[in-house]
Length: 152
Image (cartoon, rainbow, N blue to C red; front, side, top):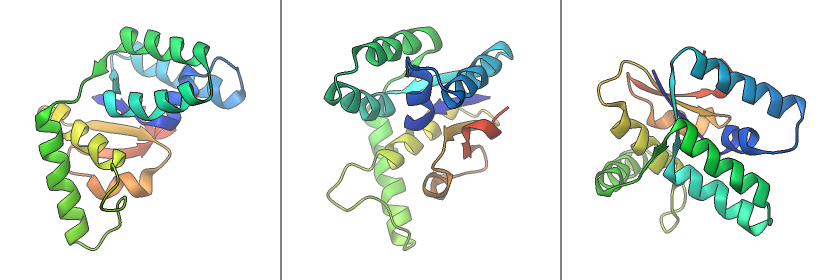
């Protein structure tokens, strides 16, 4: 299995302030890793979270983000990702389903494209999120958006 982290679980994992929610998410991640499940930080989600952490002046969270990506792995964007994302965006729009506005960067669509590209024939590739409804419009037989806590 391959798991790509969306911004909410990634934000909880990299938050230096302990809370029941952040502790639970960190335990979840360690549980996956201890089972040998590959978990990665997608570059598009790093961008989405990092820009907010910079805006809020959160250097400890940024350092934790950098450390986590080095520890578990970082999934880079490339031209193929954007080609897949463009096709996904057009397909979903033609089906009459909402996405980000036509002039906006659709991070969910790009994340879904990264997941499809990274799946590489794996039977199970999961996007760990809290935003299952929006991301599930891009699901396939092998790539599925799931609430992070439901991925075990």
